[in-house]
Image 1: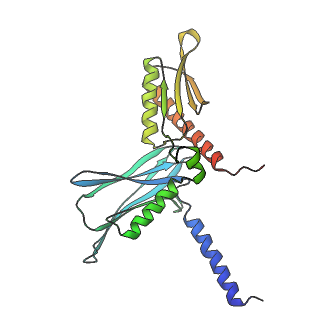
Image 2: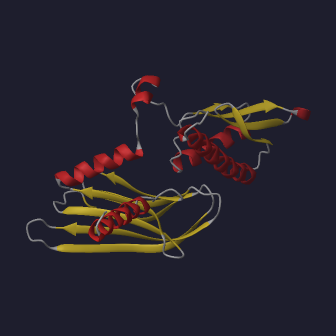
Image 3: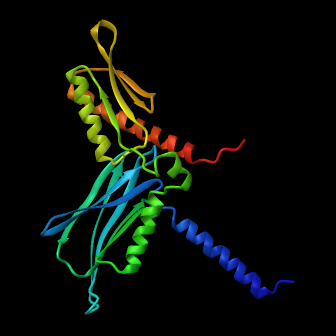
Length: 260
């Protein structure tokens, strides 16, 4: 018969595993991302948030730059914080800061995004001038974000998948203007889908034209073209949301286990 001590250890193990599982569920509803742009003089750090849900998200964020000097053990921390509201499928830059490109300190960049109840939804972390452990952790993170299975490597030429392809098939200037607005939003939101997106314009009644937005050949939105920029911009924002959620739906169905 198991002892009280063994029961206690078993319970603690379950609690520990459960805590790990819960703590790793970040970026599923709101994705936090740190982007770096560097030149010879400085590194520009920009934190962004992307609303992956179909509801508005009221959020609070903190972008931290933490410097640790390995020789003197001096430590400094600089925080930038604020609030933002994201519409469904919307991405926004939250805060920007810069550091010297010639820094020798170990620098931790940390972006945390919370909801109004202070629940952590999004998290990103980058280490500059990191240790070997930091490099190993960064590699593990990259593999988690971009998994390539053994089966996929056989199915798709060693795991290489063409992404972010948006095809233009327009016939008029308003159609081309819409495509430029749509593609600008597609790249700004880092959608980078595996399925091909097509913006197709065709003739309709009374010499009008109609735009169709297709994902992997399936229609997700169609509307009659009007030359007003405000109208085209509004329709591009609607289209980008529908495309994003359609791509996410395809990805979910592809990752799900099929039972027969």
